[in-house]
Length: 238
Length: 42
Image 1 (cartoon, each protein chain N blue to C red):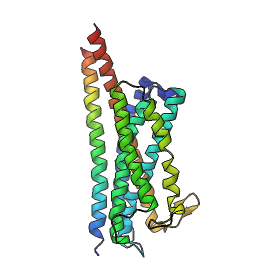
Image 2 (image 1 turned 30 degrees about the vertical axis):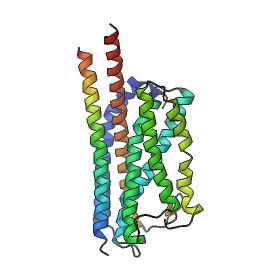
Image 3 (image 1 turned 135 degrees about the vertical axis):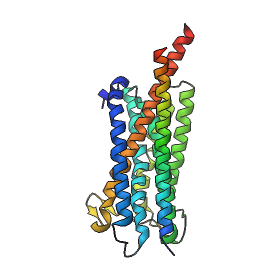
Image 4 (image 1 turned 180 degrees about the vertical axis):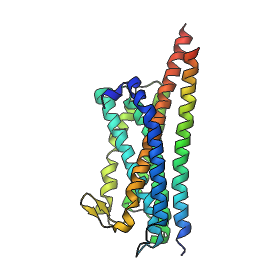
């Protein structure tokens, strides 16, 4: 990981990795979604709406994993001063915000036929909505700092402090028993039958690869932009 | 209540937003890398 903190070395890894993540991600996500729509049986209680879980669960995982990535990048930036850490944090944020938004919208669509309501101020839904707004705040703060040629320290501190929301989201279904169901998949196994569960790992891995590809593309864009800005400054000074 | 419009809507939102994210990332990457390459050749 430390070896990849060098931008030139990182680019040698990122160029082929972007293509591979994109191809593998698209293939797995498409196969998983088609299988989830056509090959699995309806749930005995939820009926056909259970199929929404194949896009809802990966987006919930990636919405949370994205902030974990921001917190990790922020720690690297503040502790080890990795030159790529601030760039990585800024690159993860749009992908994390997108998947948090997908999680909120697909959950709301699932809630209407299942719970009889589009939205409820329940612990899980509210903490996820807070995460989405925190992403927007991080994107605004990090962009403003970059424009003012700051070192990104304020955004990094915000990224670390904001990680407090992750255990709140995770344990919300245990702490506040409201509408959202409890944990169905854990380290000890799953309460979902295998006939319904099997396409989920495909969409989980597929969307995770697409998240990785989107992040790598943003990092490459920022590195190229930084190169252009440095070159323009040098040309201006001559 | 027919569940299929809800299932189709959820998948459409997920696919549309994911593709939008990927296209935006790809377009900004291509634009920035092309600008950097053009400056290098000058």
